[in-house]
Amino acid sequence: MLGRLNHVALAVPDIAAASTHYRETLGAKVTEPQALPEHGVTVVFIDVGNTKIELLEPLGENSTIRPFLEKNPAGGMHHVCYEVDDIIAARDHLKASGARVLGDGEPRIGAHGKPVLFLHPKDFFGTLVELEQV
Amino acid sequence: MLGRLNHVALAVPDIAAASTHYRETLGAKVTEPQALPEHGVTVVFIDVGNTKIELLEPLGENSTIRPFLEKNPAGGMHHVCYEVDDIIAARDHLKASGARVLGDGEPRIGAHGKPVLFLHPKDFFGTLVELEQV
Image (cartoon, rainbow over all chains, first blue to last red; front, top):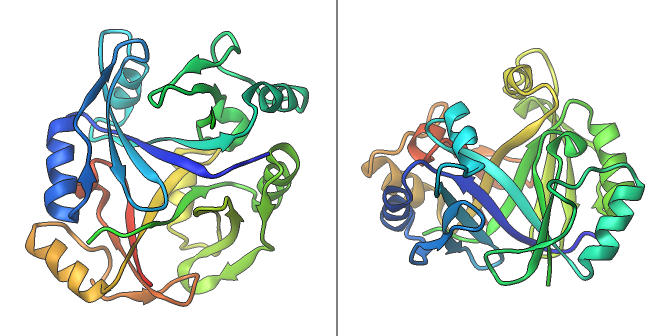
């Protein structure tokens, strides 16, 4: 069921400063910031050849990234996103095995225009897992 | 300078339980546990096609994973590892730009038999970064 690693997401307090740092210090290719108000984040992607690093900055008062940064003011590793062929089949399999899907359990459209959902970190040893249908 | 994502490392309190969970719930291909006493960890790798997920369990009293798990008892995202062509050149470039290399600054041999070093998370927005020469 588990497909490729689509991206690793890192929360940062200042996406402009982080983008500059990744470009200048690590020679990384960083996209321009993209505001996703429906997800409460501004994102950039770093193409590392085989997968992507997503930098996340909170957008709006209700951003779920905001409490994460209150606990980790410098930023930190936020989630991993795996690709699946069929997100509804994957969700139903995971729910049947006891994993909890966040929110109302229905996929939403993510940063790449594809259906995504998130699994509770308590069911994956403290790691927040996103699934994206590709 | 920044090459492919070699792996994402997730610390877990019980690598046998985590391996079973990743196999059974996510259908993942998980290697057999490998003890690396010189790094203070037991590791397994999950091949996700384009990169690897590394699960880490502390090994020995002085394991650096132990304090991480004291702060995050359920486990959590621990580090990302990027590939570089020349680890000495990468290190010297990073040091010149102000990044701090952990330990004595000299590469050690990592889980794949290749030279590795770690960069201070404070210089990468709270994310612990490993570099591996490939």
